[in-house]
Amino acid sequence: MEDGARPWLLVTNDDGPDSPALLPLLRELSKLGDVRTLIPDTERSWSSKTMSQGRRLRVVENEMDGFTIASVNGSPADCANLGIHNIWPTPPALVVSGVNMGTNAGLSFLLSSGTVGAAIEAALCGVPSAAFSVQLEKPDYQRWRRERNLDSLADLWASTAAVSGEIVAEILAGGLPSNASLLNVNMPPR
Image 1 (cartoon, rainbow, N blue to C red):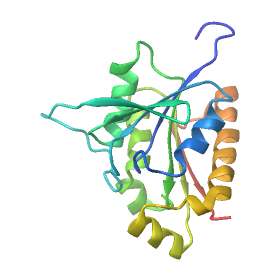
Image 2: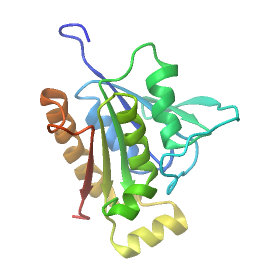
Image 3: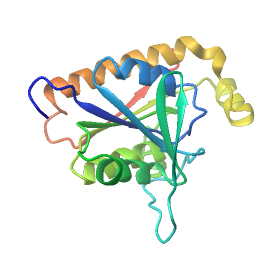
Image 4: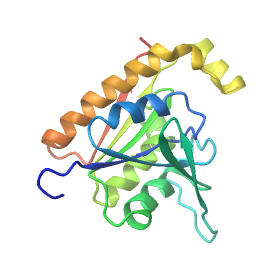
């Protein structure tokens, strides 16, 4: 990165374009750097670090609230890999994955999470990464699974975006904790 240049951040997720956490996160991160978004075209939860092999991936761009959102018919790990190596001429300063609907704490969730899988792929590509997740109250999580609509939780999306932005700012200023290739952050529902 040239002196004085803003870093660029690659944002991905595993909940796809209808995630109510996406736009608040993009607004917050755009204060810190240039944000580029490459997400799965549909929900790809529990996809771990799967990569598409032997099929053609297609990237489509759409505008959402002033942001260009690129989506691909692949996994979150595909998004990280394509964003780092194929879509843009230089790799990002940081890959931000999430904010995921539900926590990714504990070995079974870490090994299964598409959100964490994208962060792992970035780390394996030599790019620092952070995966962000938020625990939902049980009725909210059930409503998300059933209706795919949690717009009523606008305060939650604003606060998770703010916390994520603070952590990303710390990473950009000082790097990841020593001996870490990625950071996995789980936030409570309040």
